[in-house]
Length: 100
Length: 424
Ligand SMILES: Cc1cc2nc3c(=O)[nH]c(=O)nc-3n(C[C@H](O)[C@H](O)[C@H](O)COP(=O)(O)OP(=O)(O)OC[C@H]3O[C@@H](n4cnc5c(N)ncnc54)[C@H](O)[C@@H]3O)c2cc1C
Image (cartoon, rainbow over all chains, first blue to last red; front, side, top):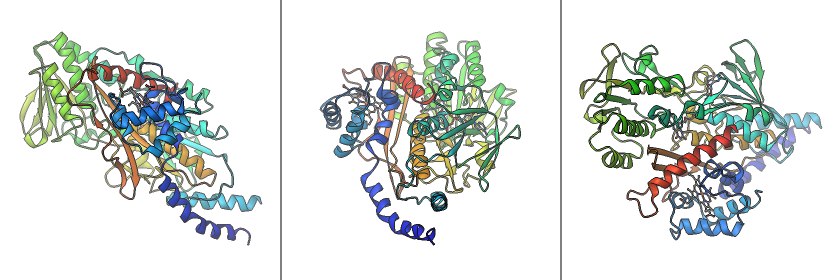
C-alpha cells in the first residue's frame, strides 16, 4: 500500500517542477561551466585569456554588461554576453565568485 | 523503508527513459554505477563532471585506444606547425580523478538487462550508460573510395596515422602540384574543419611550394564561416585556392586512387595529393545498440541528452542529433556536463535543471590569423536553437584591436583550457 501512494503523489508533483525548471533556465553553475573551455577548468586559465576564478562578483557583472552593450570591445565576449539575460549574468557571477 | 525507496528509484528510472523525471529529493547524491563508452571529448567530460558532482559514483570508461589524439589542432600537424605528440592525451588524469578506464572495444549493449559487452567477452553492468563513440567514416559513400584507398588518398578525419600520412604526402609534393580536398555534405564532424585545413595547407604551400594550387570540390553550396574564410584566402594566398560549390559540379562522383583522379560534375581532375573526407555516421556501437534513427545519428531528449530509443542511456557528442549544435569537441564538452548533471539528478530522484549548451569553433587561417564562430543555445519545444541576436562569427573587418592576431592566440588558449577541462 505504502508503495503505491508515493507514485501517485509523484505524478501530481511533476508538473509544477517541470515548468519551473524551464522557466528559470539553467543554473548559474551550469552556465558558468560553459565558460571553462576558454577561461580554464574551474575558471583558472593558463594563457592570455583571463582567469575567472578570483574575480569579484560585481566586476564580472559589470564586464559582462559592458560586453553585452558593446561598451567594452572584445574579440568574442560581445557575441557571448548577448546570449544571456541580466538575471542570468547575475547568476553566473554569483557562482564564479564562489570559485577559489 | 528500503522497499519503498527502491521502488521509487525504479519509477524514476523508468520515467527517465521517457524524458519525464521529477521526484522529491529523496536521496541527494545517490550512488550508482555509470558506464561510459568512449574517452573522447564527450565521454571523458561526462566522466569528469559526474565524479566532481558526486565522488561516490562508480564511473567506468570503456575506450579502445591507450591514449586520445585530438582532431582539434591536427590540421596544424598537417601544415607542419604542431606535432602529433602535442595533441596526445593520456587517461592518467581520469584515473587520478577516481574514474576506471578499461581498455577494450564495446561490441554490444543489452539495454534490457543494462549491460555492455566488450570484445574480450567481459560484461559491465550499469545503472546509467553514456554513449559517446564519435563518428565512423562511410567509405562506401564515395564510389572508388575504401579503407585501402585511404592509404593513397588520406581522409585524415581521425587524428593519428592518417594525419601523419597527409603531412608526409604534402612534404613530398613537388612545387606546382595540385592539392585536392573533397568536402562532404552536411552533417559531418567539425563543419569549419575542411576549410581550416585548406587555409593552413595554403599557408604551408605559400611558404614552401608557392607555385602549387588548391582545389576544393564540395558537396555543399555554403559552408561554415564561408565569408571569413574566402576573404582570408584572397588576402593571404591570392589566386591559390579554387572552391567549387555543389551546384557548380563540386559534388564528387567517384575517385580513382590508381590514377589519382577525382571525377565530379566539374570534370576529371588529377591531384598530386588528394584528401577525401567521406560522409559520416554515428559510431558502430550506437548502431549495434539500436540507438540510431533512420538518418544514421542518435535522437535524444534535448533537455538531458537521454536517448529517445532506450531507457537509462544517454548519447553525447558527434553521434547525437543536437539541433543547431555543430558536431564539435566544444559541443561535446558542454553536452557532457549536461548529461553529468542529468544523471546525478536522475539517480537522486530530482528533476535536472535546464541545460546550458554552448559552442565555440576557433579556426586558424595561418599561425597568426584566427577566426571564430560561437553560439549560446536555448532549449524549447523547438529543440536546440541558437539565441537570437547573440553569437555568430568574428568581425568582417578587423579594427585596431587586431582581432585576427588576438583570436590566433586565443585559439591556442582554448585548446589548453578545453583539453585540461577534459583530460588533465
Ligand atoms: C580535422 C578536424 C579538426 C577539428 N577541430 C575542432 C576544433 O577546432 N574544435 C572543436 O570543438 N572540434 C573540432 N573537431 C571536432 C571534434 O574532434 C569532434 O567533434 C569531437 O571529437 C567529438 O567528440 P566525441 O566524444 O563525440 O567523439 P570522439 O572525440 O571521437 O571520441 C570517441 C571515442 O570513443 C572511442 N570509441 C568509439 N567506439 C568505441 C567502442 N565501440 N568501444 C570503445 N571505444 C570506442 C574512440 O576511440 C574515441 O576515443 C575537429 C575534427 C576534425 C576531424
